[in-house]
Image (tube, rainbow, N blue to C red; front, side, top):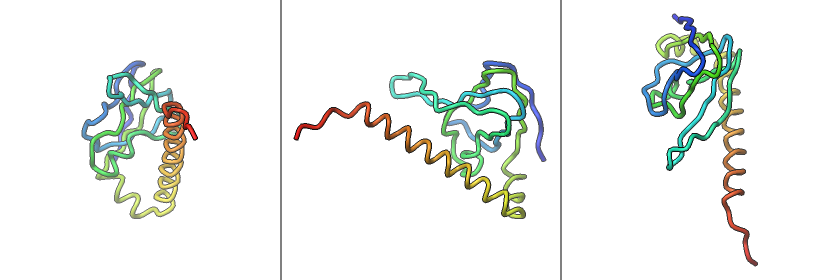
Length: 127
C-alpha cells in the first residue's frame, strides 16, 4: 500500500510539472517547497516537517506537480500512491475531512502570501 524511502539532504523529491501519483508523509527531516518565477528565480513557499504532507495536490487531481519539493535534511518519507489512498478516503470520512482541513489551511496561507506580494509590487495610488 505504501512504502518508506530515506533520502539524503538536497535531494529533489519531485519537480514542478512532473506527473504526480504519490504524496509524501514526512516521518523525519525537513523539506523545502518552492516554485520558479518567470525569470527562473526560486520562490520558497514554505517548509514541511514530521507529520506534514507534501505532494497531495497532484496526487488528488491527477495533474502535474504544482511545486518542487527538495529535502533540506536527510528525510524518511512515507510514499502513498493514489490508487491506495482514494479507496482509503472513501472508507474513512474523518481522514477525508482532515485532508480538506489541511488543504483549506494551505489555501488560506497562499492567499495571504499572494496579498503580501501584490501589496509589495503595487505602486501607491494617487487620489
